[in-house]
Length: 357
Image 1 (cartoon, rainbow, N blue to C red):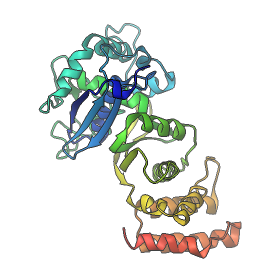
Image 2: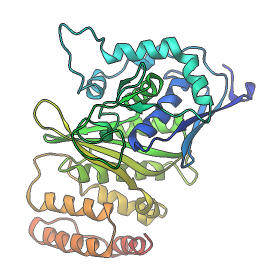
Image 3: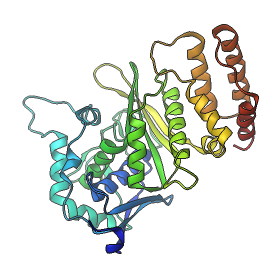
């Protein structure tokens, strides 16, 4: 098998941002996996967030066609992506999964060429030539009734957005292969780490490890906080010079109401506080203990549920006020429910890092 040094070829690709944070990130991941494929370790793909765009650097020989395994995988994830697509027996419109495979297969080199251009920006609007529906599972900001075309300024009932088929296709690939879908009875949380500077192959390993683990689904906030702790622990265990660097977790929330889920908002959660904790052995021990405060079971009630909610609130907004609220509640849990007592040095580790956030 050829090694990276046999090629010495480097290519750059650009994923310009639109302001739809989830959509932008999954396009970067999607273009990366389209280039690297599922079965191979070459070419090596690096993704960096440059602020205005994600830059993909590819070292190795570019493929001439897509890896066919891009279109296989967990059927549940495919249904999650296209859950707002209404299947009708008399529908003339093909299923979007089949549409995706055709777009990628027939336009593989064109998609690569388009993203070699630093000025290629997705076309988004009410009507886009050969456009595809921008489903809310690709970004809740695109949901009908959530935003109009002028994103971020007008909120009322509006039209479903469309996006050019190249951008749509790589976004779907990114969502299928790298988004973490965490569902509860009443809501669904979509999570993906923002790729500040990552090797895609290393990221795939972290993603696979996290997908094996459950997270607390008491609320969307506990889901976000618990997932982020697990992510920080995964990175810390890879040593002082990990091949991945994330600065935040991008999240979208959908509320389950009737037949169609409704957008519940989204944003970015900074990993700064968790990363500071993870830098020392005591801080990592603290993260492990915080991790255990989030119950996986949905049946947890009472003080343990309250502690999980307060822990999440503190981690999302690590202020002294939230710390005191969490500490007070935890002491009640220790007295009434025999929650394990904290070591003083671990609490001091938390307080030290709250003061620097």
